[in-house]
Length: 306
Image (cartoon, rainbow, N blue to C red; front, side, top):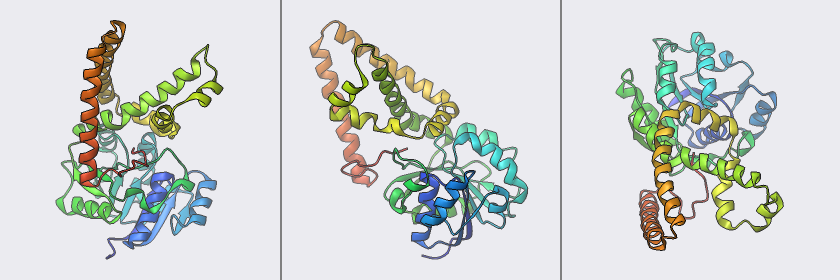
């Protein structure tokens, strides 16, 4: 594959950033990949695993002369990072990100990005419950969706460059309005993670059930459903903060549906419960079948998506 960007800088070398580095190398689309992270140990692991070609302990040094800079840190780090690197970005450099919330990020960055730099927001919908530089692998984005949420300031040329970049990493790419993106991700990713975190906390807080019993007697459903509660707590606390409006809107809908189920259980209305479960089982199968047909969901659903 032809070189798309002579020099790429990845800021944040955890699961996503590290996997991007490995996928770039696999695709052969850049002559040099530079990495930055705040932790010295992370930088050492990144070098030893070959996630990047070179590391820099200062973000401003990492971005110098880069054609593409990728923000792969928690959302709350974006603004201070951009404020730091702004004066050192190459004229015409493209800035993109991997964040799971878009509206607030776009709003926070719009006034601090230099006028000669184009910020094209993107979100690879891929991940596992693992985190850190040891967790990255080149195949993470294969047959996974990446959503680009262009702004009015983006040019078609550079949008297509970012589209091609993610496709070269193995992703299927779609453009979407930022507000719509946030609502879609709230129901498909953010609410499920919130429920998983909460149910683990509920199980832990049961006074008459010990943690050892939860482990001993947990069925596959509990283990599988709560696996995503092992995800990076910093990343997810930022996601709920940055996408709070959409999450609260979807939580209201979810709570309403849950209340109807609670009422049916209280009334021992087995017919209502059965019809609801039958309907949702059918809907769930249709969703999974559609995802497999598009290639966006692995048949065994082995990886959790961000």
